[in-house]
Image 1 (cartoon, one colour):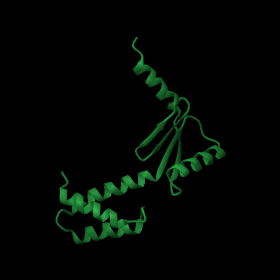
Image 2 (cartoon, helix red, strand yellow):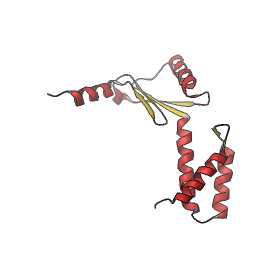
Image 3 (cartoon, one colour):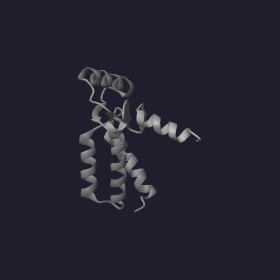
Image 4 (cartoon, helix red, strand yellow):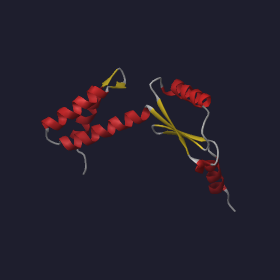
Length: 132
């Protein structure tokens, strides 16, 4: 289903109403979504779908996923979390995962930013660049 231009515009405006001082307000999001579903204006499904997408993208900007080949020590995890919070803001949450397929190193994803310092990524780069 294609979302109309009017629905996208409405969703962006509703998204602006759900933010206060640059931060997403969870209660505001809930109230807006509930009122949109209960009122059911013309094109509300497309508006709701776009609004949900905008909220998801904004919440992903505030969440870091850190993948490492081996578990991090608590001190290392705390230091990495504070470094990420100094870069992306104090309200950033961090999730630590173990991925042995990385072979070594780590991959950090915050929203659409990805920093991949894993051995696997380096091997893939080497494999793609070699002309043997």
